Amino acid sequence: MNLSNKTAIVTGASSGIGISFSEKLVQKGTKVYGLARRLNKLKEIQRELGELFIPVEMDITKAADIEKWIKSQFNDSHTPDILINNAGLGTFGNVDDLSIDDWDIMINTNLNGVFYITKHVVPLMKQNPNHCHIINISSVAGLLGNPQISAYNATKFGLRGFSEALFKELRYDKIKVSTMFPGSIATHFFGDDKEASTHPNMMQPGDVANTLIHLLETPDNLLINEITLRPLNPKNPDSQ
Image (cartoon, rainbow, N blue to C red):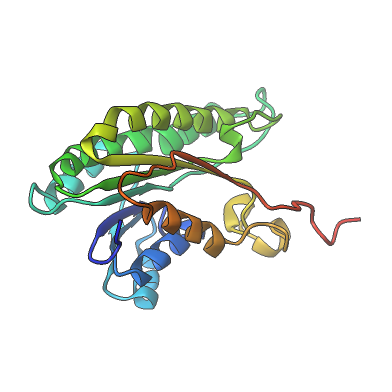
């Protein structure tokens, strides 16, 4: 796909790799609708990236709000080319300590939200005369289970299954579906204090975003449906 003059929707665009995804797309000449709950942060990003980045205040767990926005923004002659389902969160702990609310918010954000927006974007992509691409951001936690992340595992394993079925469902409609399974990235995902929760051996958001751009720019009849990204040496260099 030639990304110039294309239209993308990026969820979770106000932080972490969502910002990097949006930045790399804008640099390629793509119009990006950046969705997140924090409108003030999205407006800050727009000031940095320019008018090709369009802030959209949105909670992806609100199905009716997503449907209303998509119907107001797009139509048969104005369709999205790219959907990046990036929004996600994790709360960790033993299963007997995890609250019902924590379970529900992970399911609603990491899994239901992906379905809500994809359900309404797919019919528009089917009307698009060009090839389109949906990229779902999972995690290495979608490939293997580990103690104290059982709920997060469940959402990311579920996203893998959803993506696998979706790619087979949509491939003959000229819609690619890819899933990225990144390991540890130097973002605020592990806590608000970035310096305390990250270290130099983690992957950098810009490098992960470059990989996403590579997936999008592959030839029309070439699909990379799954890709795993890990730091070569994941250990904190400051640890003893």
